[in-house]
Length: 187
Image 1 (cartoon, one colour):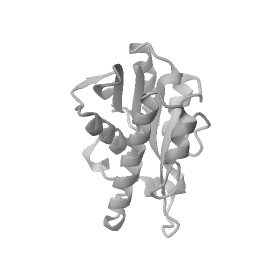
Image 2: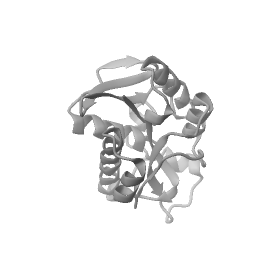
Image 3: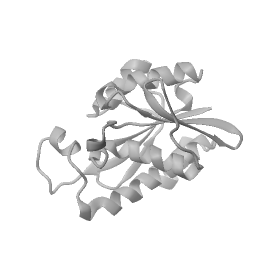
């Protein structure tokens, strides 16, 4: 069983911000698998699906970004799975806008949500799918940037990136090796 978590902030005012790319991508995973977020548990909105006969949990933590790890830790415990079956979707300021990068493990980089996930789970050894948000034309502090809304002219670019990230998460949860998924989707 896989647990796919999209990081973001739960309030409506954050819905179209850069920091909610993980939330949007998790929603795309649910849409592609034909399921809805019907319940709240483990400090997250949760949808359940099946891929190749295996249960998949798709979650959007309600803990806010900087405390996302609490929900992830609870989900892994409740569903009795480990970091080898965890996939985290999130925005990444360190890569160009609209790009998708998949890694089998690694540090949190500059991302506080990922710092929380790593601190709470005690490991960096889980798949992560990053959606690039950096725009070299925008020169404002990172915290202001990530909490700002995506510009209308960039909206389709990010919708496409979130869709690709969702497809990558489904590919990993389908049993494809992360390295193969990286080859297909990175860029």
